[in-house]
Every structure is written in structure tokens, then in C-alpha cells.
Length: 339
Ligand code: A2P
Image 1: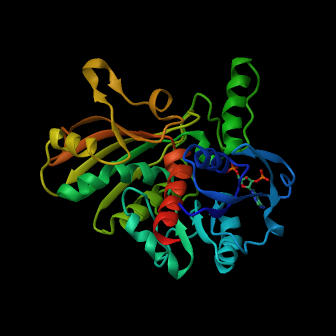
Image 2: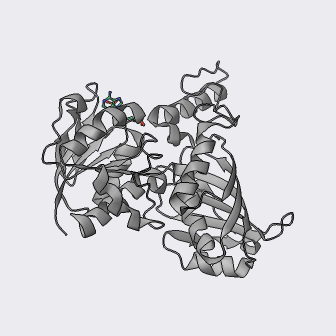
């Protein structure tokens, strides 16, 4: 494979660090690697492929000569710097919500709609979906292709790492405070997250849903290219470090059996079926998903309250498939097919 010059923006954050690890694990063909963060981290040293690389200040970086730039430093940074990187000739893969709903910018899950990557040419930007949408799309695309999905009812159980490294530290700190009978302090979340659950992720919208919930609606429509699919989400933050879980109830357009759903998912790329309740075999974030690449599907059953209804439990590492891994998979397709 051709070697490429790569820049990671947000290299010191939860997703950026995992992108670096996955590049190494998968032997991504890197020529030069630029690690970019704020001026706070400039000069810090990180290891990559046996080399010591110095973190650079994004504000002073020139993207000229960079083939692929991945952004995971928040929407405001992407808004300001991603178009500059694209103008300098880099193909941007953006992990924020900044460009996801732009009609001419592709929103890609590598196993679901890789053909849309070709559309990067218009703006030089490819958007990476929201973590909750990502694992749901991997699990549901084979069913949608087979029988069509009419409606999705989804409740999420989302890990704190989805809010960044500082949120991981907040859960650990609050847990220690509680176990030591100290007063609990919070900075990242508006309420205590340790030993609690918060049905409030991202900002409230006028329709009473949170933005995290609406992302699942908008992104499902865009990725499956079907605005008629009904999506009813509730997004909840739970005191788990890594790995999002989802309870999904589907209404399909045509009837499909549980056995057929299992067969389809078994054969699908990126999915691991863990579904034998007689052996207590079901996926959880801690036992299956954390640190792994797959989307784990368990408890597939006929929905007892819904005609043409299928219910399932879907778990995946939100920092890996939900963000960093999909980014690297898109970069791999770019290198193989487009560069
Ligand atoms: P830094 O460590 O220098 O603050 P997380 O999602 O885990 O919170 O990580 C956010 C990432 O975005 C970090 O790598 C952080 O770098 C980076 N970042 C935050 N603000 C800026 C900025 N103004 N310019 C460049 N990178 C930034």
C-alpha cells in the first residue's frame, strides 16, 4: 500500500490516542505522522511505531503535504481548521458533528455505506457518524437490506468516555469520593454520574429531545438513505468507562424470523453474535466490547408487543468502532481506492 502523510488533530484526547494505537495495530501505511493538539500540549512526546514524536500546536501547523487529516478535537476546532486542511489538499475525516448534516459531505460507516466515500471530492471532507448511530447502523443494515425497517425504538446506555478524557476522570474521581465518604464534585456533567444515570446528553432541542437523540434520527436517515424510517431515541449516560449499550426494538416492513436475523448478522462484517442465554452468553461493555473492534449483538428475540417486531441488545466500544476505528477504516479505504 502507498504510504501517506497523516495528521491527527486532537492527538492527546480520548479518541486521538486510540487512533494512534489502532494505526499501529493495523500497520497503517504511514510515511509522516503529525500529532496536533492545543498549545498546552505542544512539545509533549508520544510514541509511534518505536519513534518518539513531538506534539505540535494546531494553530501554527501548515497542512501542506498532508494526505489525510483526522479531526477529534471538538466541533469548534473542526469548523475553523478542517476547511483550511482541505484547502491545503488534505482529505479530512471529521469525528465531530460539525459537517455530518451537510448534504454534500458524506457520512460513512465503513461496513455500511463505504461507496459514499467517493463524495469526499466536493469538499475534501468525510464525516464520521456519532458513536451511538455507528453501532446501531452496523447491526441494522443487514436487516434493512433484507426486509426494510419501518421504525426503530432505541434506548442507549452510554459510557463516559464518549464525553472525552476529562469525563473518564470525573467518573473515577466521584467514585473515589463516594467510597471515601467525601463530598461529590462535578465539572463535566450537570449531575453526579457515579452510581447514577443521566438522561441528558448534548444540548436540548426545541422538540424536547436532546441533540444526541436527534443525531440518531438525522444520521440514520442519511446513512440508510431513507427519510421514511421512524426513529424514537432516548439517550442515557451511565457510569461505565468504555462501551455503549443499546436496547433496540424494530418494526420491519416485511416479516423476518429470529433465526433469519441471527443468520444475517452472523455473516455480516464487523458483527459478533453473542447470543446463547442458556449459557448466559450475552455481551456487556466490560466483558466483551471494551478495547475490542466488533459490534456485539445479543438477546435477539421476537418483540412480544409489536407485529413484525424484533428486539436486540447491541454493545460496542464507543471510542473504537464508535469513533477511532471507523476513522482508520475510512482512511484505509481512501488509501486503497482513492489515493
Ligand atoms: P489538549 O490535550 O492540548 O487540550 P478529549 O475529547 O479527550 O477531551 O480531547 C480533546 C482533544 O482536543 C485533545 O487532544 C485536546 O488537546 C484537543 N484540543 C482542545 N482544544 C484545542 C485547541 N484549541 N487546539 C487544538 N487542539 C485542541
